[in-house]
Image (tube, rainbow, N blue to C red):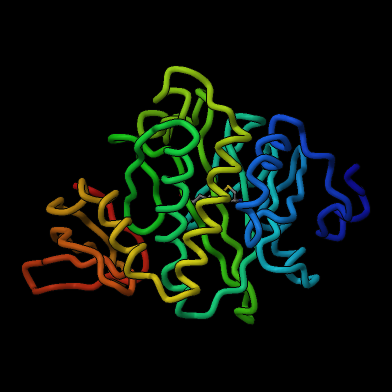
Length: 274
Ligand code: BTN
């Protein structure tokens, strides 16, 4: 059980809980494909953020590929300081301890987007699209997102993944822009299978990056981002709005945008479709 004293000191409980059978069974079936990522999975009914728990475990020196999953998060976070809505059982809230080189780290969120889309497709046959740099969409609505957070000393990266599984009462600010696998399929997914297939696809795509096969991943990303090319977007640079048309993604993961002032290669931040 959660050690209250541990939480007061900001540490995750020493011992995670027994993994529920609906997760444990598919993970066991796919275990031969989970040698690099998912060989060790820590399950919690509720945490503040799985990425915080994973960061503490990383600081204690756990090996690369350790995964933290929770049924609910009380302080799930998204990009740009936003909150990630994380009610019990309605989503997959997953964080992974990785120790990538800087070259691999640069392509990590794009690779994670491709991998999670592939994992969802394998588990449900749903065809998701990616939006630079780290969003997953089903048509016009967001279904998931990735957040890669590097340690200050860059000795590890925590890759956080949030996926909406079930229809739920989203907060008004995102209600008309969010969707879930259940809403798209018309039935609830097998969450254990979704988790196991996503970890397996991540294992494969992360291995590709480490072995210098980033170009194949970029091609796969492009194929899932076709809806973005030719679209007009807005983003902020030094506090000022800029606009342009998305042309492509570069081999280093930058988004290539044509603007009236000339071409721009965007390496960080996010864009809004206009
Ligand atoms: C985004 O803004 O699109 C990224 C969302 C990332 C959410 C996940 S849920 C698991 C992990 N724990 C967190 O607190 N955030 C990430």
